[in-house]
Image 1 (cartoon, helix red, strand yellow):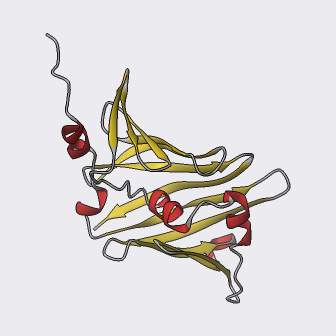
Image 2 (image 1 turned 90 degrees about the horizontal axis):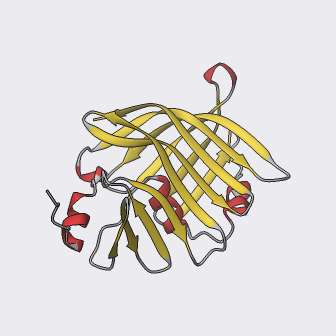
Length: 192
């Protein structure tokens, strides 16, 4: 039996719209920033606000003591130490000129779905081609790799999918630009 090929719209309709499925998500994880000259690792707790598309939380040191905070929104990225001093330079350096809106969108795995995508069938899944961005979608309609053409060698990977409250969520996200990397690995996630 040969399966009928899906239309572009049918593929787009099957991609999970995570933000439509819950009002908030919260949890814990570890955030690693690294480059050839620099490496920083911190535990974090987070909360995601669907309405404002803001991912925010606390950076945690030994014994769960708060050592800083972070905030990703569609138009800004902020990382601060315990005294309120901005420390986002490392993140911005590592990711180079990756625009804030792209960074926050993909760190929060809010794959934008609009008529601007061109859908290309692949042997295993699909590619969504957008303006300077290509998103690879698995046969299960889950994003697993993003290439950003306006930034040389920039990519974002989504792996370690787990089901949380009936919804598949990537528990590991790695953003790379050349040899620089921002890695977010979630340990615990709760949807409300």
